Image (cartoon, rainbow, N blue to C red; front, side):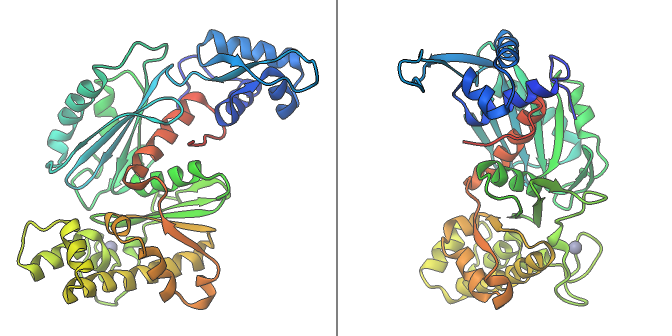
Length: 383
Ligand SMILES: [Zn+2]
């Protein structure tokens, strides 16, 4: 993990900053009470954080005791720097600039792109220079960038990408030659899980299932992202659902994603409808118009996802499974339809829903990674 630009933050400073970031605005007295650190120590740390321009004093709070002096409140200076998030899909590049509280400053989606290793570095450099050109002056400038990859990533290294040719391509170090901020690379389903976790701190065990060209899951166990020995954990798209079934990019046969990814369903719809340019909303319109073939395609997709959801619950017993896909956003009953198909044991032990942060969930997950690395806080919640 990267240290922030001020060096390694000491433990008490991290704690104070974490409480201000997640629970602010708070007074010095509130902080002292919540953390169990004496007021003099809290004041000294607050002074440092104000000098660093990471936090700021805002207005006057309510006095807590009768006749007591009204305290000055402290909050994160969210404009002290900016985080960049990038999601590289199989045919798009989605970007967002965030304030330090994770909120959006601006987003730019670039659809219908050719994604390949020969051009990606130059493409990203141009895009990032463009979106950062108009950023206002700030004490920390760009604090980092996290890139979502649709594939397997381990320790900032890409090892497998079925949707494009990035396996063993040193994307982070290529980009590092052009930018002076930390660049992190992470699997997109892991980022989905992190965004869902940061949005709801009651979810200590959760799984995010992301469905695009492929199908993957991010797993949070006891508030920690579980990535496995080689970054392969959560690759549920490669769960085998048919012996000797469809050939798969992983080298196997009968993998789940060859039956139920959005890309597979869309390709089938294009064939059936005779429209080679059909997009997901076209499939959705046919579905709500009760087109028999569209209903069959979606039903089929839900049947396969039910296998994935059931097996995932059997393995990890999460409190929540959040589904992230364009189809599930268009069909509000999508999670419920999966739940209705689950066997009793797993159906009664799961909250199944569409991801809270919508189509931008992956980008917010990337912001969580960048910002918590920069602030070095043990916990970072999205408001
Ligand atoms: Zn496979």
